[in-house]
Each structure stands twice: as structure tokens, then as C-alpha cells.
Image: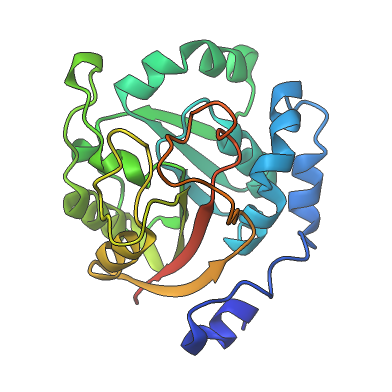
Length: 251
């Protein structure tokens, strides 16, 4: 039993995972010589060693990187799961349009052969039943409540998307969520303008589906963050107060 599950009754499990990754596969992925320089530069603020270790990513897994953007985590996942594993790197069309140059560079010349790229709108996502060992939602849950029709970002049916993930995940699979913290009690109010979301809302909505909360981490907390500012504001981007929740699909 990992430390998060052992202390489930406390619901705030920030102390066990904060010593960095002791996982050899994760450490090797971080040190992989083909990783882009810009990815390495982002590591100190994104702390992927702690994220991937906390979400129990291991060689041989099949992992969905939901709304993968430019593919920072998809590349790391590719190296961690290895030749016997598979990464499904998902984007909607709006994300592809926004990150096209980064995506094209990342997947050029047959790089990351164990990564399957899919471009599909969230409301149409469908994957084979009980095939996923883990799903990562990194800085994207607030986008479930974002709307920009002029740039092809339509309304997302969050409960429907969660049910699609439930169907695709194996019993016991991990759902890992990281996002920018909004003011307590704000629900989804700040998703549109500030790209933030109330952690309590996320917790409630996900647990209303097929998932149990099994841990919380403080690895990306910044109590000096100003929740009234957008996450991309000058001096804020990369320094927001972020929650990390680990859920497990019920059997």
C-alpha cells in the first residue's frame, strides 16, 4: 500500500510524496538525451518527477494524456512506459491549432513510436473498454468549463467525458488531476477568464462519477499566489498555486 492510500482517512496527504522520485524509469525518462531543451527548462516549475511518481506511472502501462497540448507530458510518459507500454496523446482541434509548431516538432521523423496521437472533441471521446492503466489531466480540468467558439473550443459535457473515461479505464486505474487553484467556493466561475477552478468543485464532480479520491499532494502549492489574477498573467505563469489530486477508478 502506498502512503496516500494508507492515510486516506486524513484526506490531505502532502507529506509522503514530497521527497522526489525514487522510480528508476521516471528518472531515466527525465534524463533521456532526446528530450527538448525547452522541456528540460520547464522541469523545475512543473516537477514531473513528483507528478509521475505520485500518479504511479510504470513501464508497460497504457496511459491517456488528456488534452496533451504540445506534448510535454506525452513525451515523458513515452519514455517511462517504454516499448511494452503505450501513450494515447489526446487533443481537441483547438489545442492542435494552438500548439501546432510544438506538436510537429515533437513528433517529427518518427519520434516517440509508442505514442498514439488522437484529435477528437471531448464530447466525442471513445476508447476501448477497460484498457487504460492511468489517465492524466494536467492543467486542463478548468478547460471543461471554458468556451471559445470563435477558436473552435465548444462547450464540454464534463459528466459525459468522465463517464467515457470510466468506461475506458481498468478497475483500480489512477486518474491524476493537476490544475490552477481558484478562490474557495467559486466553483467553475473563474475557468473562463482566469483559467482556474475551485479544487472542491473538481473533487466533488469527479467523485460523483466512478472515482474515489485516494490522495492529495502539496508538491505544487504556492500560498503566495493571487487567485484574482489569470494564470498566464505576467509574473504568475508557472508560479500558480496548483492542486494535485489522485483518484482511483472503482472496481
